[in-house]
Amino acid sequence: MIICDPARIQTWNLLIRSQILYSVKLRGQWGAKIINNFFNSISSGIFILSFREITILYHIATKLLLMKIYFWSVGKAHESYVKGGIELFTSRISHYYTVEWKIFPASKNASLLNQEQIKKTEAVNLLNALQIDDVLIALDENGKQWNSVEVAGFIQQKANESAKNIIFLIGGSYGLHESILKKCSSKWSLSKLVFPHQLVRLILAEQIYRACTIIRNEKYHHS
Image 1 (tube, helix red, strand yellow):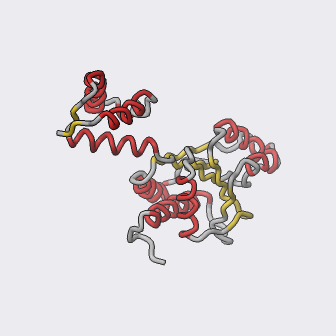
Image 2: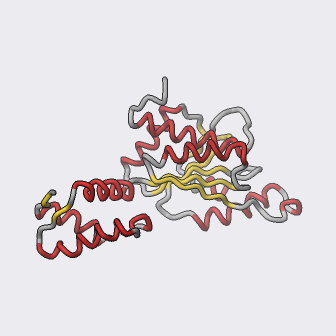
Image 3: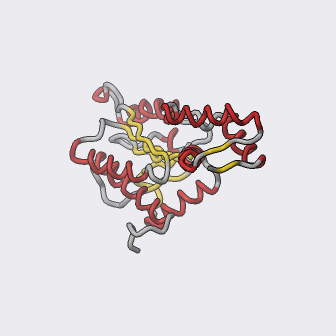
């Protein structure tokens, strides 16, 4: 058992009052018990936490305070030949950052529109979903080519800058409209080669996982 001193109480109190700990993931029976433990004892100036409770709270608070990584893609849902790999690497990334995929539908009535109109239509949904503080990185054939260490450095830099959300965006069949590209912090070209749209998702997920292991100096990447 650990008794928290006033300084620690103040720190946890700030976390609670800002509702950082009120995530959906905490709304289970065990999470509710821990929160009740806080509120039932915080008024006394001293509260007691078990080692298990502190471990859980530390893990949750750390994940909630860290930058979140999003993968946005325009098109269909993951196809079967890449789905397993995408899910595997996305799961691995979740050990480092909160991560989420968002698939935006391709433009409707595409056969009646030219390429520019298709890109403009798809850009509307993307712009509506974008928040002012989001760090947007477009996967674009005209972007800069990074090696894996440079990708890791970019992610670490944004984390050091306390970025809230970093979004890696894969455009539709004809790429991204200029209105979206203007919102990007960076444009990243995976390769001079052309890959199928679905395969790009898998490559992207693997590369971001690789970057995470480089940041942590783990053994996955061999330079």
